[in-house]
Length: 332
Image 1 (cartoon, rainbow, N blue to C red):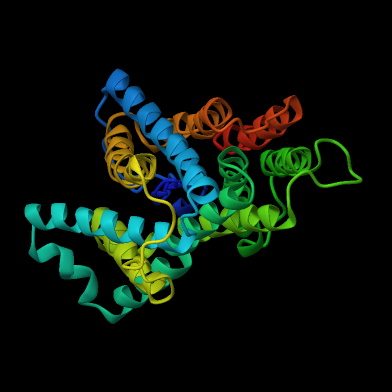
Image 2: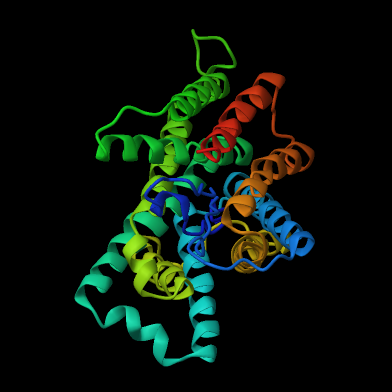
């Protein structure tokens, strides 16, 4: 979310670059160390870690669909517990390394304000909208729609810089619109094959991902990335807890529920976070984020085999069109 996304979705680097050369990772998962100056040349371990993170995020989305649609687990409860547990664990780990530094982000009113905005409109929003898209459609569709985020980022920078989109950006926008149209209509423009709510939450998750990518640039320059992510998770989880009451556990609980919820929190959040982070250190943010495109593929394959998600040829074509935008934008 993973950080998706699904995962926790990690902070991106490419949107923070003035020339937008670095590209974002979506359930999400975006690189929080894109500004590192030195990358250790450990290609094979880096590739393995990036793919592993993507697979964990993809499976996590399917587990979330299973919990929402078959075990009646509330989105609010799942998101709040996931954020609180993962955020607390990340801060505890950071405190073991340097206890005093985890409070540094609160010593400035400006940093504290930026963190609160990011926690609610970034971290919490991207997690909630992604899971809502899954609940109203399926893990594959929800994950793919969130990958529209980089297109919204490109549009944002075109507006801010008062320029028309470049040829590559225009091509990416065209592919994104075509892919979304195919996913939503299956090529039949007279009807929608997914619900209006699914489309709304899917597009909302992409917009939230764009905000999640752009907003925390100053925070990341002044604070350790793990502290930014950890505190934003905790604050976002606490805010949602006001409405969700995580101590009031909903749904049908058995070993399947425990296993799926555990996978979402442990593998889909904590382990995937560290795997992605380690991959960025070894092969850099751009290669890592491109390899993370395996996430929707993993979500689709697992969803089809486990939950028997209907995913026709036109859905595959639409998904490939949307994923193609990431490769197009990475060429900038």
